[in-house]
Image (cartoon, rainbow, N blue to C red; front, side, top):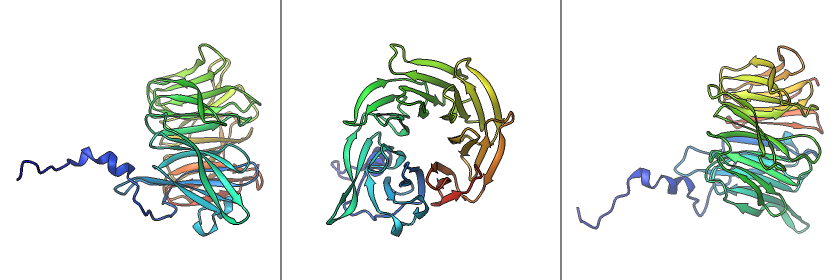
Length: 336
């Protein structure tokens, strides 16, 4: 073999293949649906990813109604992302979307509607301030700020107008930060976070020491968090052991608890005071009644055939929607 002949070892070019974007990429909705979000006016976005090829890619799709997803022919528009996606949210009722990517990018997309042009999603701002995958995004109730977190152990609070980090909390947890959630109170600057280090923290950006520990149990990693609808003093936390717990942030005590799944909880969505939607690393969608002592199961659906990844509630039709890695978007009619 000639001395100047060079062979790259496969592991040395892995990052190149994962982030490679060919000149012409087939524009399609990938099989793995990672998130769904429905605006107050009923518009829906769907995030899909391809993680099985030589390079990883993702896309975001826009629907005028969640019932049309995930049919490509029924979508209003869509756009490719520079890498696979994990989370996305509407910032306003219709036009502005924020997406977190596995590359660490946080991107704001804007819906462009012109009389003589087809509808399109165009990048408005993008920042690569996270050093690893962005796993969770939460938008404040007044839409003025967004909090993001992920595998780099970093939490960032963003000004949505310019996509500038207003606050950065490095090493906020000692393991992957799985979920962040803004308080539902009007114009609140308080949010909660949870991670695989077993900690649930309450954050107030106005304080010099912003974090308060609500739970700290390294034996049980926490994977999902949400605020109980209509109660700003109660947090709902899901664990890697499949446990759902109701926590009082004032006394830092467990109010109620249920061993719901045999796998890690992935997402919690509080719809109403008496309805809490859950999904895990399984094919089930379960709705609980958090007001009952045993967190009674109100609804259970097993139509998905792979992991359920996204939950969102359409206030217009009063319908819960779920999406998963089986490329299904399923509507759940729940008696609320």
